[in-house]
Image (cartoon, rainbow, N blue to C red; front, side):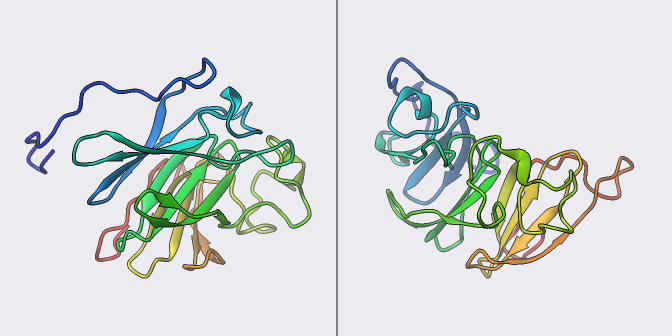
Length: 220
């Protein structure tokens, strides 16, 4: 669409291919000049592997923008000790240069920073995460010292639902848990910088924020 709502191009109906008899909906989208990237979820309880029906929603589909044809399907990776970090995708965003991609997963409580070149997505550099030494196993919440763990573990996520880059490729992550309604800031390499916001019911702060966008003039 144009910003005036005029249709430029419309695809036929398409849905994720079936793999092992299982299909789940697309849950996030990002667009460049040439490609459309669609994250597939939801499989928070079953995303331990890759390449099977149990992890078929742990994938990113790349479609050509020119004709909406499928260019590539890229599987996320997981095993018994590592949740598929694309398995419960809540947001995808791409930096202004089109060279970096962020993917957030609520089920894995994780954010991945990837290099990007067309249909090629690099490996995951984790942005924040669980305490050192703890396996990133699905629904292993024992590492949480309290509901509001910002003071103890300020760079760790709990149900991240939105990610964004600013003009310097700094990274911002929205945490949407009811008692962790704040935004974390990381530098362009994924190292923690600061956090801000608090839960509130009266409109002067955040309550379950579920998305974020930063303009070209760095307004959030």
